[in-house]
Image (cartoon, rainbow, N blue to C red):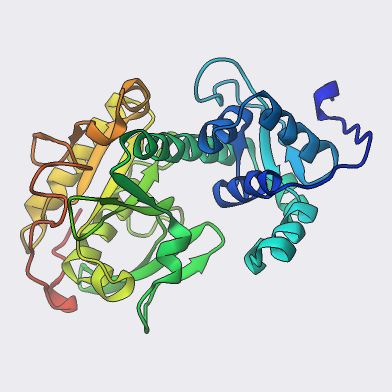
Length: 335
């Protein structure tokens, strides 16, 4: 094991508010690199050192990455996760009871593919938050705030991998129930708009299968797309989340996969018994990383055009209307 993965506590650490902020950011993202933590919190040299101190005193864990492509940008920095001690500290000092988990065991159980996925997800979220900070007229709405404000009777549940819900479909005369769990749920509130716009984010590292089977035990891209379309058609997002202006964003591993996703959406559009609105948007990781301002990025969709899904003028506060079908009529045979 390289030396950087060995702890050397040295002198006692006097915890500061900034240390709790570091622990909280790692907790809410699950995995963050040194660079990502610094960018989110605006840390300079001294602040970066605090990250190391928190590791050496057992509040953070350094994750050994075996995938050579994991670094979002540039060289391979340290990757941090919360430890059980760090979670207890957040619960004690910040009142975050959900942080009290057996993080040490969870950190050992994670496979490197899920590590890579989580870091990609963290990078997308960090870039969105940076863009909001630069503009100054946009507030980033995190998932935990959305969860706290769920309407009474909401069907949304907190699963181990995020917020999710179930949607019923009809396929070949049989009722099918799918669980939809986005990688992350967030929103933007532009100062000039009364109503925020919300997003279900999916980050694809190339591990999700591209088949169109409803009986696959593993979640497929097609299942997620159909699930989002039917959730919107049945207005589950309005009943369960309390908002109507929502879109699903897919950041894929490559341009070819983004095109594949888009073609699958076109199939759904052709065979759905109701008009499918523009709610699914796609881009690839390279395009997203190159974008100077991710809020102004053009996203592909199943209508063969490109849209600024995040800040398109006149569309931020609404999504195309669609009639709500009855459940038994909500899905034509997709094969």
